[in-house]
Length: 339
Image 1 (cartoon, one colour):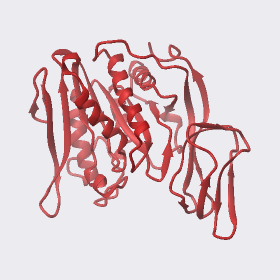
Image 2 (cartoon, rainbow, N blue to C red; image 1 turned 60 degrees about the vertical axis):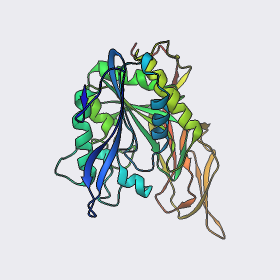
Image 3 (cartoon, rainbow, N blue to C red; image 1 turned 180 degrees about the horizontal axis):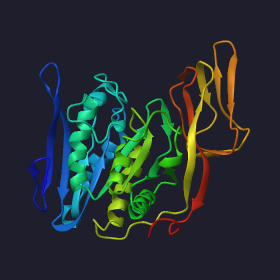
């Protein structure tokens, strides 16, 4: 098998850099590539991370898993591109200061475009030919804390089998909250456009893909890293890439409507709730203060499940204070998992 022009044989590991551009100072821009190939045939699972430069937990879980993996037990191929946005990573920001574009809105990319368009083109051109399944690792941005959760999407143009398989993979990843997003009816739930997202492009090419959102950005979260590590392993067991039985998840929350709650005032926020909790209508979510008065209380207008909360306390009008689920159902494994 060749990947990005590198050959890898059964039973081998491959670690290389892929040149994706050049800086004005004549230095190369490179992204890391890690590939593990089992001695027996099987599917290709591709893991991606740090399309936003402050998303650290997924890339560290990938690194740990790659070097712990026993190639004698691997069927198929595990591909990792754990750091897609090196310039944003260097700056510790979601986007790079080269073009200020959200790279996860640029897929399938443009070979003659800006920095944040060229890398998606290089990676997706290879991924769409080689990957059978994809896990796309993210976090909420660095101003937030979040409970680990997954996102699988119902995408126009994707087959029912692809949609069902992505949902099943997301659930077997093993976290309690799982967002089930119908892209056709989810307009406005998040800022900006999502049509150029990697997971949506994968689904449109009938490559089952889900997003694993592993905590908050810009800092290590050991619990989220461990959850990501276990999730990768369980998905590989589910896909029969490793020997053994996958662990069936327990009762899970399937969130079908979600959104951000925002501040109307500028000041300093103190959150009254934690990620991963249910809040009843009328209960306090957050309070915004100036130095001499209380400016605003944000209360739940309906029952919500708190996915993420503001970690960075300095807020302006319109800033996001909480990311919540509005509609959900609890579901046992075996219900709606595509099996």
